[in-house]
Image (cartoon, rainbow, N blue to C red):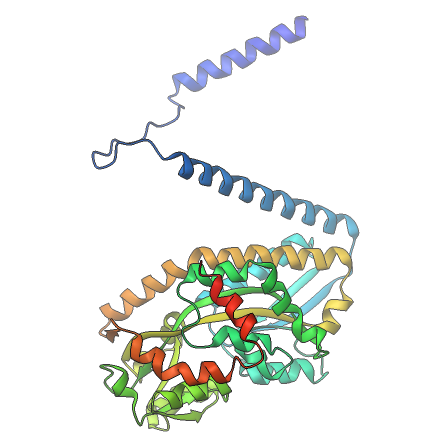
Length: 378
């Protein structure tokens, strides 16, 4: 009893000391423009978001604890990224690396090789599937899997499929998205998807002036030998020209191609404005991306390590969702400030009409599945 009394006295003294030092909750500043109390729905949404975050943190802590206790063997996974680390996807990759290494208790090391040092996306895919074992992971554009057992993934890059980022994330966080991720492995290609991200809407840029859709007529536009992009460019009256991404800067500089297309952040980080300072914001598709791993590398991991990879993927995907819009807006403003000729598109109708044929051709046999993607907008 005596010890309890002493403890209570100490607690009281600490509380008094904190009050005397001014440690109290700050009152919110007055806002004349908004005096109403938050709506009940908003408060409930905030509570739900807080609960979700707490649940994610708890799950991550449990995963890290399990990994640390498991004493798993040390594994190094080489991961390829064609873009610099300061891009949206580069930051997502770095977050994934950080979380994997933390949640695995240090048993997994991600050797992240960025800026295309390991080759283009197709080069990397070929290396991953060739059995050399030099690259175990990569961040790739979803459409790149079309020729590697990812037939469903082709639907993700069809022009004007995604009305907004919210539309995309409604899909990316769904059960249907998991089916897309696992399709290549189920088809025996030897790779599987771990999680989705996005790098912003993709737009055309050129070394010539871009006023409207008619400006692209007759241009040589760089493509990556993707049938959907070829069809899109042809629909716009331009000439698709295959150029390796690593050679695109010089191709624009020398006139091998007149134009190309990229998300805004990648456009700036790869210094393309230096040789093609005209950008038109047509947003023909969203830069849907995913992180993949070879089945061989995945199967070599312990259950605890697989859990760490899965949980890290969820955290990296959520991080991408959090930063993408604001990062893109910041880059676009910087481009304008630096003198980039940015053209807004007020009416997308002619663009959509020009792409109708390629959409119809590439949804044959998958019309119902494509409709499911469109329905995520609701």
